[in-house]
Length: 147
Image 1 (cartoon, rainbow, N blue to C red):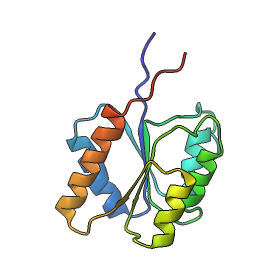
Image 2 (spheres, rainbow, N blue to C red):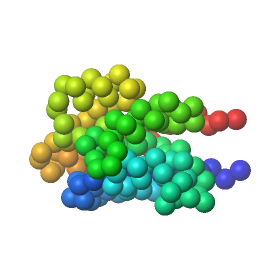
Image 3 (cartoon, rainbow, N blue to C red):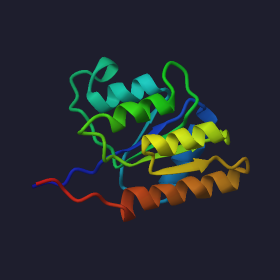
């Protein structure tokens, strides 16, 4: 049986932050493909194989790196949907946001986020934080295979 390498899903509307995050993930030398989407609607369409991604098999990524404040559908709305779905409930979700608002942090934990990382303003720190996240969630924290 061929082992499927699950993608890392990066959901980020800031192209500058997304490019930096993708560079950091590539620098971590992960074999997981990286899928970048710019908003919550596209994220759910990708996960469920609908909309623009109709005809594709639904995907369970290794980890979802999720911004909170995005157009069309927020990261917290995406997280709510994922945690209410039996198939996606166990997919690790890391909020990667510039929001330090206590309500965003508290709601993220209440909804079942696996980690909440505030994007460092410093580019080098941001790069290192994303590289470390990718290594942990995609390599070290493997979910057991389903039988």
